[in-house]
Structures are given as structure tokens and as C-alpha cells.
Image (cartoon, rainbow, N blue to C red; front, side):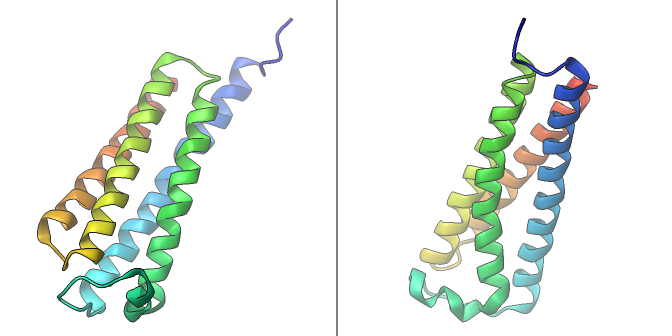
Length: 139
């Protein structure tokens, strides 16, 4: 007898985790677009203390980014109960979120570089593709 939940319950948890992460990534994307369109940030790099310059949108975007990292770790733990491909796609998505986060830090600390903004976009896209692939693989 194993301690693992039955397959449908595991699938349900994995599906919920992936859909939840996709929802949070969508909110993160919209916050990033709102910052890009409506917030004026200093053109030179600025430190962590000055990040409030962008107001609540920047802080919310940053805090949601940290939430996404923890959520992605949780999604990997859930995927570990389901199987190899679920783990692979969850780890790929975690990697995408980490890449986007590094891009965000570079963007804010190194003078709003376009390459850092591109890095955020690539990380976002990798994470979204990973979670969609995980959903497709488990259904």
C-alpha cells in the first residue's frame, strides 16, 4: 500500500497547480504592461530602496514575482507525485520564472536596459509554455 493519492486526485492537484500558475503569470504580465505603459521609472539604475519610486504597481509586480517563485516550487513538488514529464515541464516553468526574475532585477538595477526587458519576456513565455505543456501531458 502506498501513501500516494489515487491518480485522478494527483491529476486534479497537478492541473490546479498549473492553472493557478498560469493565472498568476497572466496577472504578472498585465502588471508588467501597466508599469511599462503608465509608470515613469528613472533612466539610470536605482537601488532596492528606491523601487517604491514606481509606486504600488512596481512593488506589487515584484511581490507577485516572488510569489510566483514559491508557487513554481510548490508546483514542482506536486508534479513530483505525477511522473517524469510533469516534473520536467514544471522545472522548465520554474526556470522560466527565475529567468524572468533575473531579467527584472537587471532591468531595475542597471538602467532599464531593453535586453533585460526581453529577458523577462522570454522567461515569461518559457514558463507559460511549460505549464501549458504540463497540462497537455497530464490530460
